[in-house]
Image 1 (tube, rainbow, N blue to C red):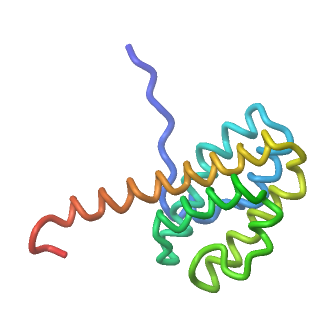
Image 2: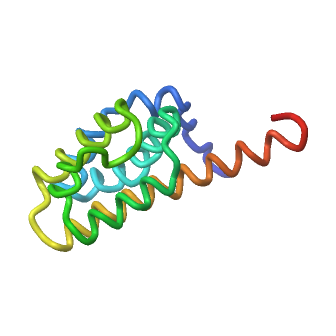
Length: 137
């Protein structure tokens, strides 16, 4: 007999997560906090940005900026992603990460997290496109 997996979170539940807090604890403490950040936190960030109309490539590009310039630098960009509401979300996440990340490896972890968010956004977009089918969108 297989154990029943816990029920998944809805998009509304994921979007309601305090991603800035998950970022701060995930990068600041690691362990189970890091697992939650890369799981529910990445999914919640993907839902929130998707709802703001941000495309996955914008988040992937932001990851490249973090990788080359650092988290604090990215947080100071006038428009790290398109859209005023999305800018406020992402800036909060970047500022939370910058408050606890102190090493190059930490900066790389932030970039990897953003890449994870972008990948989840791309999967959501692909699924939505394919499930709409021809002539139904």
